Length: 124
Image (cartoon, rainbow, N blue to C red; front, top):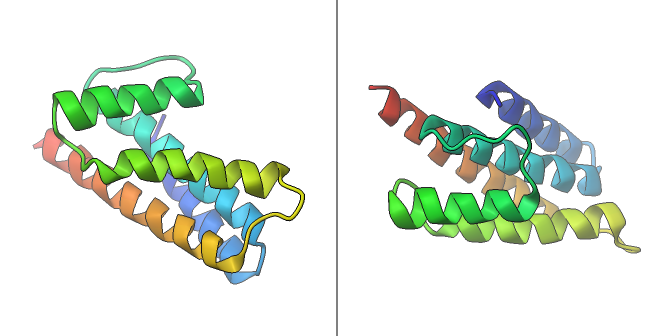
């Protein structure tokens, strides 16, 4: 997984939000976090050809938050709540509100910023 794919997902989330497509914005924002988490794990040598949502969340928490202490604990909550928001956006009868979409897009940006900083620090 390349960080560029995560950046593209975040950009798509932002564009969807600006266009008023709140459900699509939430979905893309979650995937920006999901893809960023894969990049962060790969950077420390934790790779899989495919990640399930629970396995990725568990690996992020165990390897990068608790064991190595490379990422803040709030990112675990961002990823977990992001999945719930994505499910509501993609499968919920009513979808999500603009406020919820704005929050997940903002959190995806924070998540990506933390992963990019980690990526940079580990490349030095």
